[in-house]
Amino acid sequence: MTIIDGKLVSSETRKQIAAEVAALPQDKCGRIGLAVILVGDDPASQVYVRNKINACAEVGIASTLIRMPAESRQEEVLEKITALNADPEINGILVQLPLPRHLDESALLRAIDPAKDVDGCHFVQKGKLWIGEPEVIPCTPYGVMKLIDYYGIACEGKRAVVIGRSNLVGKPLAQLLLDKNATVTICHSRTRDLGAITREADIVCVAIGVPKFLKADMVKEGAVVIDVGMDRDENGKLCGDVDYAAVAPKCSFITPVPGGVGPMTVTMLLANTVKTYRLQHGLEG
Image (cartoon, rainbow, N blue to C red):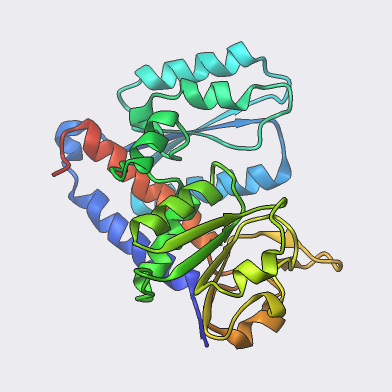
């Protein structure tokens, strides 16, 4: 059994990104820049945003943090997005989720210029992913595939199960596995006899948000298990969607929580920011 080391892969990938940023013609095209909009004071969101800002500094990307009060109106957030869309010094825009409940998340994400959508949330970017011509891939699924590639895990001809159908993780991850020629099944809370399906899978990706949901009797010997969850157990300890202690001995590869998929999400945000910069300045291809 091999434990997939997301910290290691993230570190190596960031070094590559830093080298790529250093080689960009920023003297002619302007410095690469990412803007993050944070609405409200959710403690977890503040931690995530701080990690993103620090990661930008690590690889040489200029970052702008726009803090807005929780009571901000829809129109006020839209005005900020519109201004960033028009700002030539901003190459990527990220609205930190979740947003306060009174805001229309979908409308705000649609307002971002698709060319500056570094989270792959805009329907234009999703459409390009669905037709097999992705430009910007949602960060967490992108990180999962980076781990799979790094460890040389073959997907072609394999049976893959994705538990979770969110627009941010489950659906795009299923598409990316399909693009790798896996035979993909998407499962969710309404799936009947889930264990019978997962026991047939060579690769199981869990993104359902339920602590220790995937049990040992749901996994076949030698399976690859990717845990996208970030939960708290009954003792308040950080854990994933997989019952790691019980499942790990049956796996050929498994991601831990923490230290698996988590470190990759911010790293792929950096990669996407570089990609949008290159596309905007005609540096791709």
